[in-house]
Length: 294
Image 1 (spheres, rainbow, N blue to C red):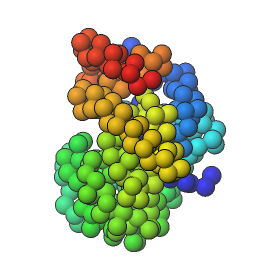
Image 2 (cartoon, rainbow, N blue to C red):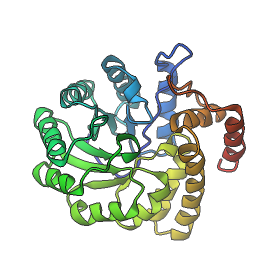
Image 3 (cartoon, helix red, strand yellow):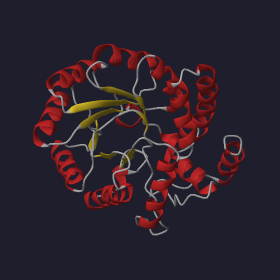
Image 4 (cartoon, rainbow, N blue to C red):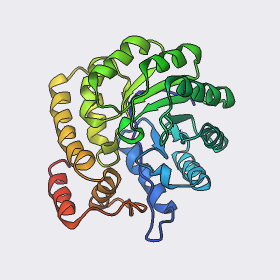
C-alpha cells in the first residue's frame, strides 16, 4: 500500500471487557465504524489505545487484529513508542511483522531525555527497523515538547520519517514545523481544537482523539476545507472544539471517549485500571452534550 498521510486518522481506543481482556469482536466492529465514516487511516496502540497499559504481546495482538480487519482499505499505523530504545525497536519490529504500514513513535517518557539522547534514540530506532515512521510529540503525556531542532535533523537525515503528529495544541509550533519541514514530510494536527487552523497553515491532516467518537464530523471538516467551503469548515470545527473540551480536557480522556462511544451504541467497553469509568454526573453530561453533535 502507498502510504498517504492525509485526512483524518482516528487514534483509536482498545475495547476491554470486564476482565480487562482485549475484546476482539468489539475491536473488529469498531474498525468498520471508523472506516465507514470516511477515515483515511487508523492508528492502533497510541495514547487513546491505552498502549502503556498493555504488554508487548497484547500490543502485537491489537495491531494484528486491526490489520486483518482493515484488509488493505486504509493504512494502519501502529503506536510503537516506549520509554526505552530497546523496547521501542522490539515493538516496531512486531508492528512490521504483522503488517502495519507505518509506526507512530512517541518521544520517550518517564525519564526526560536531553536533545542528544532524543536524537540518538530515534536514530538507533530508524537504523534498526525498515518501516515508515511518524514522530509523535505529546507533551501532555511525556511532560516535554520534542525539540524542533531534533525533528528537523531527523527529517533531513531520514526519508523514512514520513510524518510528525504534534499534540502540543500550539498552532505557532505547528506553523513552525510546517515552515521548516512541511515540504519534506507530513505534519499532522494531534488535537481537535487546532484541526482547521492547522489545515490553513498547510497540515496534511489530523490524528485526534474525538475522531474515535465523531469520525464523520472530523472528516467533514477536512473535506469542507479541501473543497474551499471555509464557512462550513469553520462551523464544523467549532462543534469539534466544544466536543473536544468535554471529552479530552474536562474528563479522563480515554474514559470519556469510551463512554461516548458506548452511548452511541458502539462497543468500546471499559478503560483499563488505574483508569476508571467516568462518574455518573459526567456520564450524563456527555450523553446530553453528545446528542447535540450527532
